[in-house]
Image 1 (cartoon, one colour):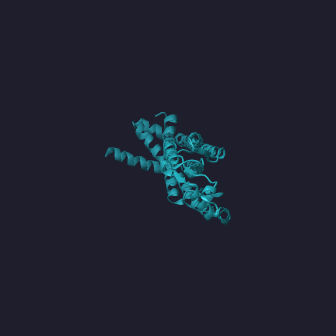
Image 2: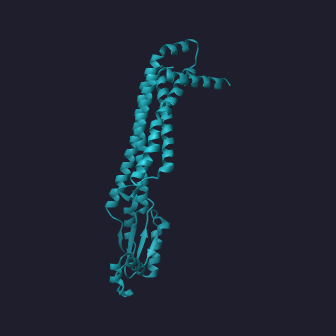
Image 3: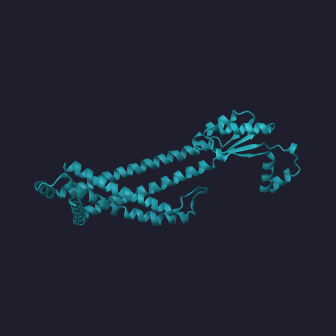
Length: 301
């Protein structure tokens, strides 16, 4: 009960302090809001870049062309060897013989249909193929090289060069956005520490009196930490509103994609609420950590 009463008193004092030192509180809230807006944008970009990368990786296909003289037994043997390669997604192995490929091409284009309609089986120059997907796009080149070494495999194609560059670009972008988010959080903590330091300095007399009457370190620090939490919560309101109203508007404006249907944005719901929770948690933690650091460093309680 004593702990609950102490906590209740600390919460009350924290709220009083926020309004009593309104100008300094406003400065802290402004710092948190501005920084969290940038953090929110970075989080949105980071999640969408990760989504782009995953979608592209799922769609990356290796096409394996077999020799014309490959028999049904050869096809089975090749499929078995492909399945032994760890990077291959075993559920995404599709075999198509040249007759099936001819029929599909004929359906897709009248020109192809006209050209191929008189082809007999022995005249068909197309090759039997396997279409494969990999579990890790970064290993697509290595995987293609292993497949090339299988007997009766004529050609392996997956968009050499371009795919590696694209995957590398996305991975680099992901790392940059993650680093940016962490850096912005650190900057926010630094700003809060310095802003709250001014608040604490202006209340030095109050702290001295609390020490003289025998208040413990916990009793002195708790109201400041709760005050930081309150400032963080208030500071996160504007970034959250921007996310909740801004992202759906952007999503609708761009029709859910960037430049092409390949690069799709994450659907607004429930994404905006997940990001809002992340921003709220960051705001609260940043406020608490900033306050705790300021108290520990500058009051040495």
